[in-house]
Length: 242
Image: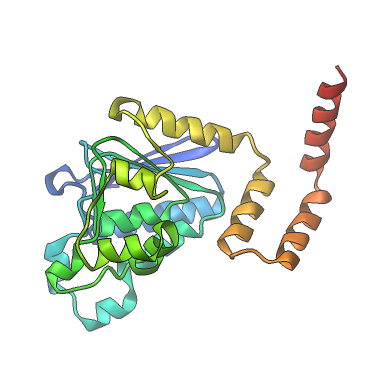
């Protein structure tokens, strides 16, 4: 890997965006390497933590590359495709955002299931100022996350959301001092890891699908027959009796 630092553990993978010369801007090489990470997590589901090196999450997509892309590349959805893949991973992804998360960097954070931020975090989508739109998920993901009014302020009026704004609007779960950001992100992952892996996976699948009574019932039917459910409930009941 040339643009990412990847650490693998039994229950999680930690990915650090690492292009210090470009403030971790997302280029084609990084997209390809993120696809490789996704392939590994699809084959062996684990939790994912994404962060950025050097006090920046990702300052956008690589403008030099975007300048040379045309209609055919736009129709391929180069950045969108990898962000969609991250959003659809079997187990949750957490973004730990320190510093700028702009343009494609913001869209990468939006694709994660949970976001934590340092006080220095800034989210924004300045794409219209470059003559393009935020086409890698911001136009609909941000609306789902913060509502139409705030999303339009960001997408149309160029508003940037600082850490306090992001917390107030529900874009991030917590604001944590930068020196404790990764520690706190790992604590969130630790809590997730204590859940039943199949239960966590099916909960994400149902929640991402918008929910439906029949879907809930079918997912629950699978879980009710699982050995993990029986073992966890037996342990709970045994603990309650002691």
